Every structure is written in structure tokens, then in C-alpha cells.
Image (cartoon, rainbow, N blue to C red; front, side, top):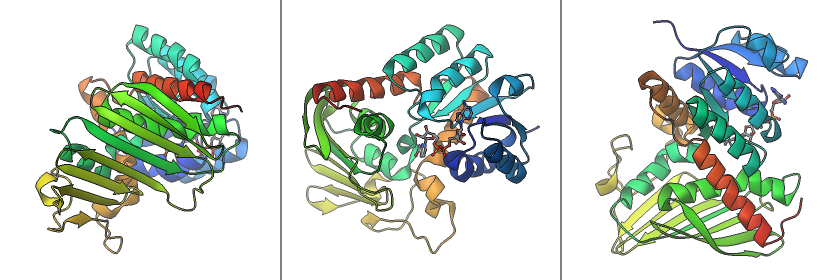
Length: 322
Ligand SMILES: NC(=O)c1ccc[n+]([C@@H]2O[C@H](COP(=O)([O-])OP(=O)(O)OC[C@H]3O[C@@H](n4cnc5c(N)ncnc54)[C@H](O)[C@@H]3O)[C@@H](O)[C@H]2O)c1
């Protein structure tokens, strides 16, 4: 069977370094590429063999099986809606649109047209978070803390919309639909308390960290169990004070026999590959499997819209100005 032909829209850093290797690993042919930046699309075409286009209209004259969007957030809504109108299934990088209103428009159109759209909240497919979720699957209520410090960003509202949505989506992955309880702003970062059907979450975000230095912590507690995931990598599960990763390991997690798991980067197994550990391979694999069986990809526009709406509610509560 011929491999699916993908059209990549936006040929910048993320598409080049993350999406292309993952698509190729998943057996998809990166067949077309759109970017108004002539040098970017030419370089992308030279390394992938994709057919370059300066704009989406030109690309849509040709036939593709799916589209992968990694253009800037303020361009994403318009691009995704154009693709939906052409009935092309879309994987769009987060946040999926400029703001909640933009995402609402796209969601309404995708629902009307029945076109599958997945949004790239890859933490849901990262093995460390899947292990954590598996470990607390029978426990309720949960108390969750997600803290992330990363920057710089053009302004604090942009940062909240671009990075804060990851934090909110991760909380929704554990707790379900969220309502804001309270929010406080320190000037350097903000924290909010949220309530979901699965429990309570404290979400902390700062733009004062650096993408060059890992600074992300997830902590989940329920009666009898505590799970921490540090910087995506170190997973600890303890029950009644005893570290027990082994009992709660889903099938695809390593059989190290240890109580604590970290990847072994000296071994080239897929398990130790950062694209796998960060969830990028898993999310695209899930998208492709959904397309193959006619399923609804997750997380989708409903999730992206919910995450963005909560971020905007927090931003309003603490007067986060651009
Ligand atoms: N999930 C993640 O962990 C993760 C990580 C990095 C980036 N991202 C997301 O990926 C997206 C792209 O980020 P990036 O770092 O690659 O940005 P980038 O600036 O490096 O690349 C964006 C590219 O899109 C192009 N572009 C602009 N307007 C366009 C249009 N109308 N049509 C097609 N292409 C257009 C630009 O010329 C540029 O080459 C953002 O939404 C970002 O939030 C996600």
C-alpha cells in the first residue's frame, strides 16, 4: 500500500526538527510543503523531497491525504479552516489558533464538516505522563500540581496562550473538564486553582525560566499514592510511602525492575528516544490510527478550545496584559 501523502504547512523549527522525523518514522511521506518564507520552504524541500509551495492555495490544487500545520498560532485558525473546507484531515500544532474565539470558529466548522482535527498536546502521549495517569486511574479525588517555568516570550499573555495551554491541557488529562477557582499573579509568574471531576489542581506558570534549562514538575497525590514526574523524565510512584513503579507499569513502559524510572540515553532503543518520550511520535501515531479506522482524534479542537478558554479566564482574572 502506498504511504499516506502529507502536506506540511509551516516549515520552521518544529516542523523540521520534530514533525518530519516523526512522520517519516510513522511511514508517512512528507510530500508537500507550504511556507511564505522562500528560503525556509526551499531548505525544507531539499531535505525532505517535498514539493514546495509559497501558499496554501497553490498546494491545494494537488492531492494530499492529510495536512500537518506548524505555522505560527495567529495563522493556524485560518489555515486549519481552509484545510477543513477541503475535507483534509489535519494535525495542527498547539495552540491551534490565536485565541479562544478563533478556536471556537474552527471547532464549529470542523463539527459541521465532520473533518478530523487533532491538536498537538503531546504530553498526553508521553510515556511518563501515561504511567502517572495509569498509576492513579482508580484513585479519586486527586490533588495535582503542575509547575512549568520557561521563556522568554514576546509578552506574558502570549506566553500564557502558547505555553499555559500545555499546563491546562495536562491538568485536563488528569482531572477532566476544569473550572477556575482562583488565580494569583506574582508578576514573575501566576498560579491558579482549578477544580475538575477528578480532583483539584494548582497550576503554576512562569515565563522567567529558560527553555535551555529544564524546569517542569508534576505532582499527583491521592489517598495511598503519590506520583511525581520531573522534567518529563523521572517518574516516581509511591504507595503508602513505598516506591512501586513495577506494579503500575503499562505495557509499553520499561521492565527495569526498579522503583524509579529514567531513560537510558546510552542505549539507542526507541524507549530512550526523546521524540518518543516527549510524546511526539505517539501523538502522530494516534492521529494516523484514527484516520485509518475513521475514529475521532484526541486531543482535538474541543480540548484546544477548553484549554485556551481557561487560560483566557485566568488572564482576565489577573489582568494579564500583552
Ligand atoms: N508541541 C510542542 O512542543 C511545540 C514545540 C515547538 C513549537 N510548537 C508549535 O509549533 C508552531 C510553530 O512553531 P515553530 O517553533 O516551528 O515556529 P517557527 O517560527 O520556527 O516556524 C513557523 C514557520 O511558519 C511559517 N509561516 C508563517 N506564516 C505561514 C503561513 N500563513 N502558511 C505557512 N507557513 C507560515 C514561517 O515562515 C515559519 O517558517 C507553533 O504553534 C508552536 O507553538 C509546538
